[in-house]
Image (tube, one colour):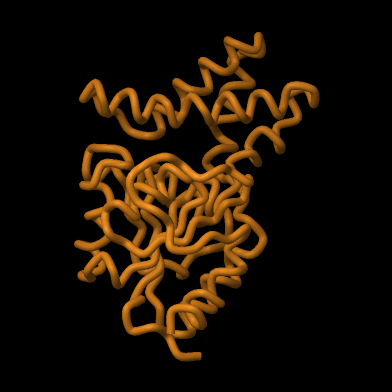
Length: 229
């Protein structure tokens, strides 16, 4: 398979793209079934909101604290807060399940000589734990955390981490994210972008525009090896 000379590396967002953020609640037997969807949704929504709000306030804390603060809000709002439940959910978040196609896609890319990396808001320890638990060791050339920039996406300084680590220009990188706001942010920064729209989101009204849209990462190799040749 011939790889487009403009695409030297594929960089992936982590949560929702490589790892299923809903798997923490799904694997916690202490959460009543009737509350699982609402808890997952509220936890995730608050987690993202807190990254953006802290960015506006110029009051950075790492993604682990943001994740815990968001969980506290969600548990309190839904009347589900107990110390044991919180601890269990935070522990499960460290070992989120990868989506089923992820390992195979990474291997296909690497076999064809495409470098692979993660660029995530997650802390280095969070990402290391998820990679290890998901059996994805050895499948990334770089694992990059927004912690290195002291800022969250969509700050351009976070996307710049990938260019610096890989020593590549933005247009030589294909960035993959399931989060529309992240996909648009990376596009506005100048990367090629494949939006892995797992959840059927509508297009954002933001600067930038993804170059391609897929439902799962299983569709990515056809774009890298076919459309962009």
